[in-house]
Length: 74
Image (cartoon, rainbow, N blue to C red; front, side):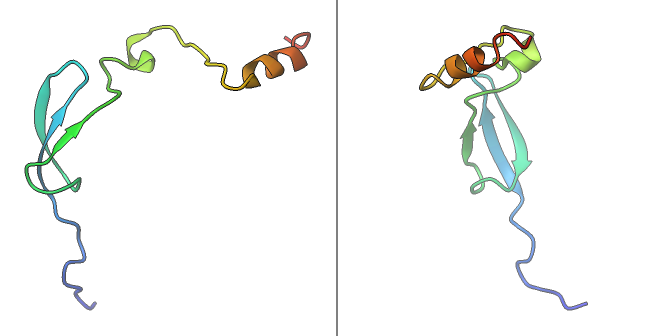
């Protein structure tokens, strides 16, 4: 099998900053050596992991139209 130079991505250490400000170091192909990845959603703040309320946002009336269309079905 022919070897291709630079076939694999660069695997290096980055810093990850969670929503509460805590940080840790991990290995990744993201960015360059020493870059920082700041998370918007993480296991500390996401409702799927913390058992919080799930809220549906009504953007442009889509949710309202859906509820009106199927209101007698459920």
